[in-house]
Amino acid sequence: SPPANPISNMIETTERGKSHSRKAPLALEVVVVGCGLGGLAAAFCLGKAGHKVTVLEASPVIGEIGAGIQVTPNVSRLLLRWGLGPKLDQVVVKPQAFGFRRFDTGELIGWTPFGDTLEKTHGAPYYHIHRADYHTILYEIAKPHMDLRLNSKVVSVDVIPAPQQTSVSGASNATPKVALTLQFGDIVYADMIIGADGIKSMLRDLVVGSPDRPVATGDAAYRAIIPAGDMLKDPVLRHLIEDGEMTGWMGPNKHIMGYCLRQKKEYNLVMAHPDDGSTESWTAEASTEKMREDFKGWEPRIQKLLALVQSTLNWKLMDRAPLSTWVHKDGRIALLGDACHPMLPYRAQGAAMAIEDAATLGVLFSRITDYSQITPLLHAYQRLRYDRTSSSQLEARMNQRTFHHEDGPEQERRDASMKAAMKLARA
Ligand code: FAD
Image (cartoon, rainbow, N blue to C red; front, side, top):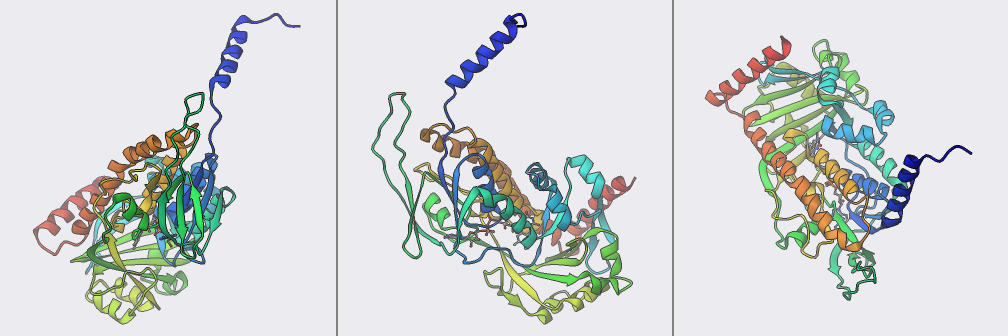
């Protein structure tokens, strides 16, 4: 036999010692309320971390409405790390540039190269994706890690106190449970609840302790998807498909974002405008006549695009100021995504922040060994995420001003600084 090596022998002993002193990881019973993009990401990350995850969703069916969404590099980085690259490649479009244009003439005011340049700078790509495809991709990776219960609207939550017991080792071994009552009377118990129940979150009311309404931002957004085939027939519009530019048109109190979806088979339009009576629904159809009327006087390409729109949704855009807390005083309920930091979509960060929240929870809860760690870990989660999401909420509000200047000194200053940056980008 080979001579004994005292060094490797020492290392082995140390490792063996370590594994003896390390406690077995604890598998918590986690309930995620809400099966939106944030809830699915949370189910995946916490399930992957070894926990038993149940997702309760109010709706009898899951999915997302027909519209596009932007996936910025801060979140595509996570999706790629989760092994989703090949699935994404089948459905996304990678914009080659981002151009900002004047609303009435189409004059280029700002331009930034995207595509490979952006991927190199940020270490991950920028994608455009259909919301339904995004939801399906996240559902598929979350599915093996969760028990999804549809038609399961949570109507109340009760915290059940536990007798204060400690085991011989000093660890608390009696975990108090949280009980969720569902609309049709079922009760579900959990060690921890993640409220991913969106902007009208009922868990938010419980956590913050003061029920109130989301704030109307004064804007609404028309949403429409045009078949790319219709645009390719038009010599002017075909460039919007072929050039790979994501285009933003900025005008007084309004702006439009246009970009390709589904391997350039569709063109997505988001048209922000002053809210004059939209409903708080993501499925409310609106009049295409009114939509066209609202953008009268915008450049000829916009007129042509809007003429191709067959139907449109109109979403009231709501947000909230940053909350005082995301964690219930009991310490076992925390919020995620739009439930705690809803924001205007003017930075394309709402879903991105929800998915980052989920990734943070997954890392923090990957080594839990005792129920007593739940509360400090949830507070750590809030500490890690709060400043970043709050500044995103505030910056989205700032973009509302920047995008919507009336013609005048502020608009001229904005355009001059964007043009200077464009010159540098193109040099
Ligand atoms: P939601 O998607 O709202 O999901 C909440 C879920 O909880 C729903 O399924 C709901 O049915 C369920 N639920 C609610 N109450 C209960 C209950 N009591 N019991 C059980 N279930 C319940 N973000 C980006 O990152 N990029 C973009 O480009 C982008 N563009 C946008 C454009 C527009 C016009 C808008 C309005 C938003 C945009 N966003 C974008 C933001 C993004 O859509 C949201 O931030 C994101 O969808 C929030 O996800 P969520 O999972 O937190 O909430």
